[in-house]
Length: 118
Image 1: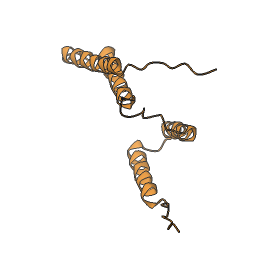
Image 2: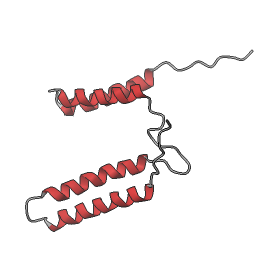
Image 3: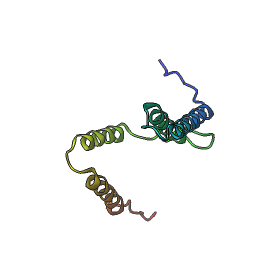
Image 4: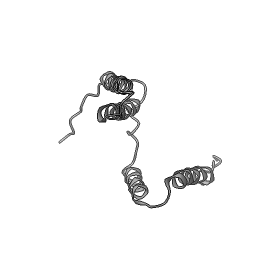
């Protein structure tokens, strides 16, 4: 049985993201003198996540950002997030260290050699 195709409405996702960000910002500005409440933070977080989802959605000229992600990359990313969340190592050192490691691996990886045709 073929998987059903769900239509994605990129404009609606963008409007929801923008609406949540505006609502959270206005609510936060309105409660400026008091302790910040639950709702401004929730609206801002949901707006940021929806904005990221909007950026990753397909357009007429390109496919979705997750269209070519392999299952092993997804599993590795989730495992890395779990390890980072469970570790007692300081995040101020761990995240920059992982970024430096990723750039080093990207620069030092073996390149495919161009073979002469003949």
